[in-house]
Image 1 (cartoon, rainbow over the protein chains, first blue to last red):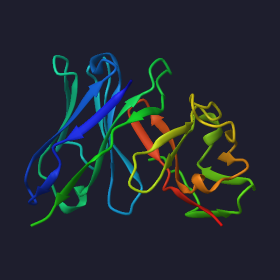
Image 2: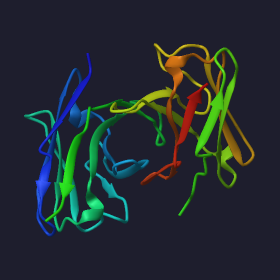
Image 3: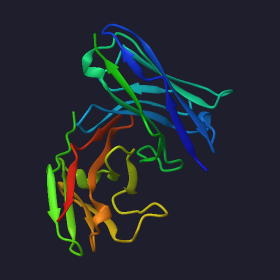
Image 4: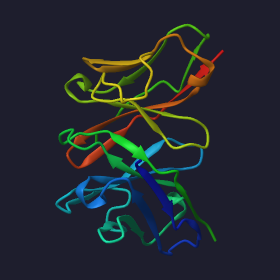
Length: 121
Length: 107
């Protein structure tokens, strides 16, 4: 059974850093395309970042230069390093797997339960 | 950047058909995916590649895409279908776009 479990969220001051983790089971992270999607309180979904099998990484303009997506094959875990955080980054952060073998425009087929990041002084 | 436009809300009586639109320039040339999100829960994929259904999703959920509008259709709506629905596509191989979401209310 595929499962994604995020952790690492919490309250952080503006300008601070945080690293989110997403532990996967039931499949191999390094063999799949993985992504982070966030949702500000009461708002819609916003894509954050994607990592491809060849380690290609892409970011939304709103986080480019501040966030870094990565993965650890030995831990079967996806990460999101977040630096220079501001109030606008306050959101529930979801990790999601992209449906395998669906070309270059796949949907997100499995999602974690999310972890809340609150940026406030 | 590409934008997807959804109506903020759609209301329908139980047993009726709900249609949720997702507008975008020539969206009919793109693959559109749809997600259902209930309060406090993670999104769930309900339709992908315009009209395919993941296993476990009822046949009542269907999709279409043509011209400038993609549509999620929910037939024989049930109280349990009340949720927010989001359309999504890839603007390029490196840019994901979500619609603003539509709140489906079952009267």
